[in-house]
Image 1 (cartoon, rainbow, N blue to C red):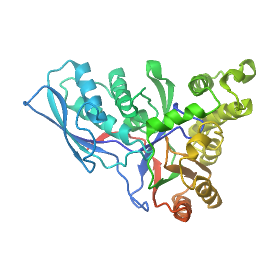
Image 2: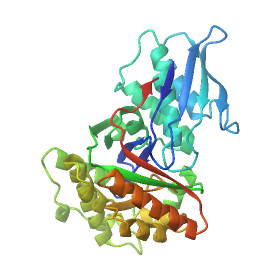
Image 3: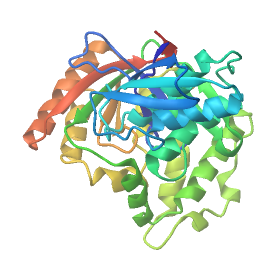
Image 4: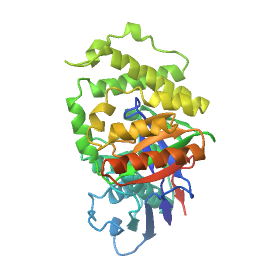
Length: 354
């Protein structure tokens, strides 16, 4: 079997670790980008899952430290079936781009190995969710996170309601929601970017939990009253409670924009994060110039995709998106950085057998 999983964007501004989206790169985009592709085949040579080759990126490990082998082995172990599976990874996505490269590989492998089982798991089975999150944990050399892997697996927008219990909600993208991704010729290490957040004057893990609970309550028809919460406990020396309030309001607006399929509401909400984005923006050469260029060209919003360095803008039409993309490319060039521009819609399908 062969499987392809789409590029993804996590966080969307004030949705750090709880929101993500799958990108469908349009064929007539200025540049082209495909998700990673995995070929999996049964073998009688051994038992277990073994990555035997990586195409396009031979420097990657070909062992249990590769997310593809790790996620695939997790599924096979969970199944209890005695099977040998060889994997070939076609690494089409740039590593450290902020577009869910490791997520694409993890999801590819889990779906491919699962397809070879005599009794495959349903796509939304907890073991499938555990497998792809396990792959992300290998990639980050730490805790696994679902904000890239769940959109790659299911497509659409995904809200991570409770990662400990693998609860999530999925929303479809609308016809008039376009994204313009600018991927500069820079590289960000996901683990390093997470460690950089330790310098932010906020309790990031606590804020993630608060945001998840806040959005969950809203989706259940019971909006949390922030006046009854001691928000000061999420603020360290140098931080501002006002930024926490704006963050929560922004996260709520993200959900409203997604549900109403409004590029304007979504775009405005993306730019309300004054907690995570400022830390990561420092690592992207020309960030402020590119942001100004995108907004001047008509973007409805602008934010870092995942941990960066890719930056994404929202737009109402493909034509608007193309104009915005050219403006972002030129802005990066003025800062001495080459970039690739991808015009995308929401991929509402996710990983698929090809």
